[in-house]
Length: 391
Image (cartoon, rainbow, N blue to C red):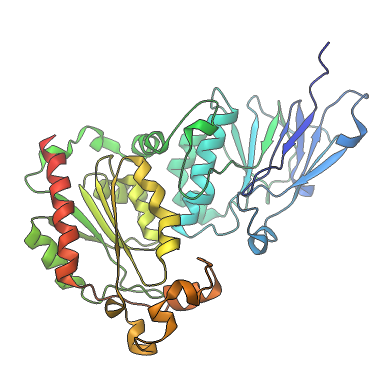
């Protein structure tokens, strides 16, 4: 005879995340961040209590120290239930790096999509969220409603006890900006995530065909402010794109840009070009077959590939334009013979991410692209974009 299922199961074997599940009815006391399981008296004494920080960056100790720790316990007394839910709870934190557009998706919505499709066959859950700040909820309200039809339970500001048939705490991550179907019981991919976004934000453009335009449309992501990575010859680059044959839309997203507007611009375009940064996350809105050129500043080659290289698996025609030293403003400050310029990888000691990466290569560096060399990439992009129109 098989042993009865454990009331609390946790998987802590992964590099990026822990995930715990209560397999019986569960009561949440938000004021103590504790989930109480209802259990028989014969429970394994080793299951009495466990703790988890439900944010998928376990490898990043500084940020994980800021994530609220939650407790799952088989202890008594179980608080009485004030709000009863028919759907199970999916619990995670919107803390950490939330507020950065890349991390909102990489650490939040893509793992949420993976977890929902891995653990909940009917997709009916109540989202229980820590650090669900008002601005974040308002910005992503439409997307959150696609994940759950139920009101969010705010783990930080709710003082009512909630009862669920069971609960899953934590989010599953497959790595930077990726979904690996082979790791899921209900296989999904970045194609499916894009379809999910199109259903959410596409509105009336779902039936717009990319072959209905006379000339390929290209979105040029612009950074006119912020810390570094400005395109110093943006007007010249735009003119070069037009000479190649593109209709060019300069798009500068801000934290207040509605996602429906961003989706309308990017989802109806054939190509996108942008310097490495969080705004390139908008490439998730491109239709499969579209062209993405990531302009990679000096010293950011590994980081750029790590963050956005996986988007090629979404069916995009992905290219990297890696700048040369003479295209970087760093050469003016440090000189062409400095190891920081001649051999960034050696200077970084093989570590793609460090404080130096942040302070120097991200924040100090601006770019002036070599138009002759960049035109080669634009011509390739144009040919691929024309194929979209013809198909």
